[in-house]
Image: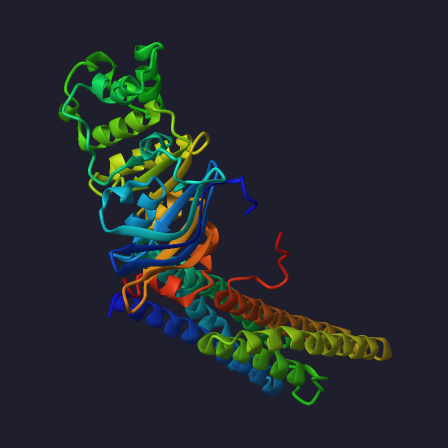
Amino acid sequence: MLRADFDRNLKLLQDDLIELGNLVSQAITQAMDALKNRDLAASQRVVAEDDVIDQKRFELEDQCIDLIATQQPIAIDLRTLMAVLHISVELERVGDYAEGIAKVTLMMGDEPASKPLFDLPLLADKASDMLGRSLDALILRDAGAAEQVCEDDDQVDNLYKKVYRDLLTDMTRDPKSIRRATYLLWVAHDLERIADRATNIAERVIFLVTGKLPGVNES
Amino acid sequence: MVDGSAAVRAIDLSVYYGSNQVISGVNLDVARHKITAIIGPSGSGKSTLLRCFNRMNDLIPSFRMSGQVLFEGRDLYAPDVDPTEIRYQVGMVFQRPNPFPKSIFDNVAFGPRINGFHGDLEALVEQSLRRAALFDEVKDRLKSSALTLSGGQQQRLCIARALAVRPRVILMDEPCSSLDPMATLAIEELMRELSEDYSIVIVTHNMQQAARVSDFTAFLMGDERRVAELIEFDETRQIFTNPADERTEAYITGRFG
């Protein structure tokens, strides 16, 4: 088999990328659970784990540069390496948002768990789902599935706006809740950004498969 | 491409050696003042195709073709066409530099002399050597033997020799295969300069060279009967970032050779 070595390295690279995706998905789940349960220790772990995510992202970038320098990749191989490079950056940013959510929990301190989280858990589920599906689309090289992720971003945007309105209403009704509502606004914002990053990943998958970046006009 | 804007045009070109078909139905436009690369696996008919463009295949007794080759809109194989004259207008550079065992000067002057050139021969030789980016290196020893030059210099001398008879098209059959990397890059740089005034076709098995140097790339591949067909022809950028045919992609990414 020609280029068996290169193919093996490409496979390992993708495996590492998916592993980074898993770490990041876990970080989101753990950060949200910690928020729900007012678990300060768990939040601290998410914050600490972000260093691991950052480190993994740089290792991925290193591997990409290595393969570009030594294997003269073109066509599908080049697009694959560029996609992995871009997606690793997106995943690292998602990790940062998960860390942001954990930090909010820490800032809320010993606030009791009974107060409502509005639709934040639902927003988190949708954003996590989009992230998972964008990575599935990568594994399966499925441009159609990736397009679907992009289209679903509207749902998340609408839900974010609803959460925003609900939090504002809460603040107006009860000024004592302003501080808490503001923290939750930040969480909502982080979750909406996670969904955005998932669509960016999906766009890179479409580029990998079709050679065209969606939304870019061809002259 | 609109007729007349192509320097050379193959229309439904098929080539046979005796009863043996080697090329099938090639349609290809060589753009004016651009570099067109022909790539493909060994034995895929690239050189045979190239030689159709300056009637070099005429020298092979069993050669037969169907279809047409147009040179600047005129049928290259029309009965009233002089093949020797064609080989001045469509010059060729070969894989192994083949300078004549003569002086550097006489190598370049040979063609013009045969053609009865009556102008300033020294100026013509100098101009040709300059255009081939060789003059400065040899100006003090034009009378010394061409065989004392390095491989890269000899190849540039062959290019100067082709340029001296005022071609319109320059065909290059793996011109850098026997050269070291520095000499190769020098020839590639020269090709880019020359393409401003000449139309160039290069056959190469070096994928990176085709990607670096050409504007258009044609991918030729033989089928199971070893008959070559044109699989894909497009802008080089497109071929090397997102080829349309999976056979093209398999070849250029080295998954099959």
